[in-house]
Length: 422
Image (cartoon, rainbow, N blue to C red; front, side):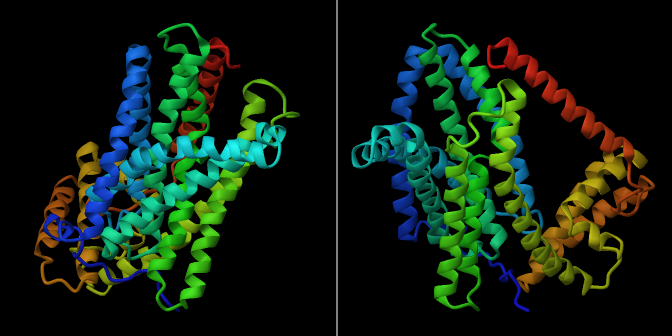
């Protein structure tokens, strides 16, 4: 059976290497031109609605934080360079948006002229938006491949970079939509339309929006780059199928299907979101689970071959390979020995992951991660919690999650009702 993990290298990420890559300067110039365009649009909004603009940028910037941490945690064992993640985010927020806004409008006009204004009114946003936007976002992952091919060593890497491009697009587009709502309300520089847009597009729609579509397209490009054991036609076919899946999911999301007949208010809106957003969300989660497990088996196998319980114990091996179990191990450490133990477990896990990557590179420089592991192990021993393992399943954590979700939905319902969106 072939593996979905190619041995990672250090090539392609250092600044000295990047400046010698022509594609780096092309991408940098494209980002600069897009930044000028977005700055001009932002400047006009800020001049007209300074308070609403500042509020919108602040709210959606805060929303980006948990998404950012979630996406980066997907590839905990072989983390991507921060600089490339920022570049992917910037491509989505600057290049993809500055291209898509006029491009989608032009394509929607073309639909009206070639077919009918009625079709454009009903399906223009569903056909034009995804066609332009998914191509623009996919090119962001292509840019990462051209700049730092060596960093794409698993399908999961493609998912992470695609999700980052989508996240950048999602945040900037949401800011534009919120300010358009302010303008449409015609009540001056008010923040109520911004908050309503934030609640609907951020909390309700954010889970299955552009970040999700970008991840699906990125998975296909990751497959194209990594699976050199397959024919070129096969790899291109898989990549095109993944991008088509992202486009089709986006078309469904924007389409007028289910717009009537599910009731008014928040319950009807939630039903529509579930029917449209759940299928692609489940698909991406299944892909992530599959490729993550294969990557985890690869790296954890490297650590298991050491046979050194001081570096990683037999009980820690399955914990390190699972995001849920890693989080459970941190919670267990906090319950047993407090927050210092929780922090030490997290640092231990990061050092073990670093060691696994260095071993996969057949690197001679494993002293630093080994020393860090021993330091954190000593801290845990002193705290009376020597292993980063999970404890008994806690019903309190499950109950707390369920209660928090219910409270969040209730608060959201009240907020939308108060703002006139219920």
